[in-house]
Length: 109
Length: 169
Image (cartoon, rainbow over the protein chains, first blue to last red):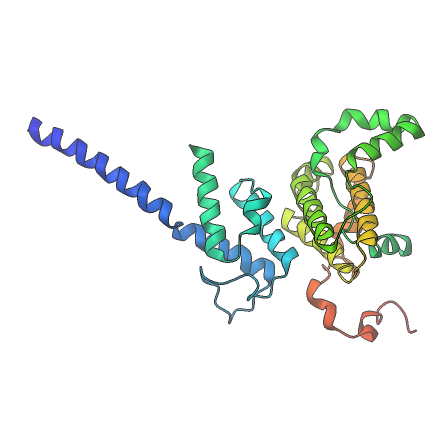
């Protein structure tokens, strides 16, 4: 019995390491969904147009001021502060979600 | 109404709140009201726009910086003027960007600088509580048609329709 319990602990440690590795590679789906929702509301996207992780803001009809406004909305929603250089690189929904994930993990770490 | 719209129309960056509002908090307003010279110093200190933008690119940059500053000041403004039950931060952001968009056709960097200066001044006034709640509500919360928010994407409609409610001519 004791052997079984000792073996179970290292395997759970390994499980945790795996999780963090995949977490860095891609943003969580719920983050992407939240970003999509904020973008849809901000740009008043009609219901027919799909907003996916790969959608570019410019394709959805956003000008540069809209992009800045979306970033500020995300700052408020996730309670983070995006600095200017990072904000300039955001072109798609996926970029925004990845940046948010990074800032949130840095904040909680 | 005409004076505020005039001021708004030449504000490229609308006139909004200042992000460094924490520095000049409530206590300072009493100092500012005491004398002309002190008031001037108060406003001047917070305004960071140097006289000349070298190019359109730099002016653009400054506009976005100003917008970010204004948006970051929104939570403190909502607290100062007790706007929580009247408007959401998203709506305030939308009204700020609407003000900025009103002047989006401007091409001269110096004009943009001037508009930015006006915007910073307005932002200062708002964050240092030099205005009152009814000013904020009338100017930034309520649209031209009363409680209905102005549509930003309304640029395409004809001039005739835009003036329809105001007068016959």
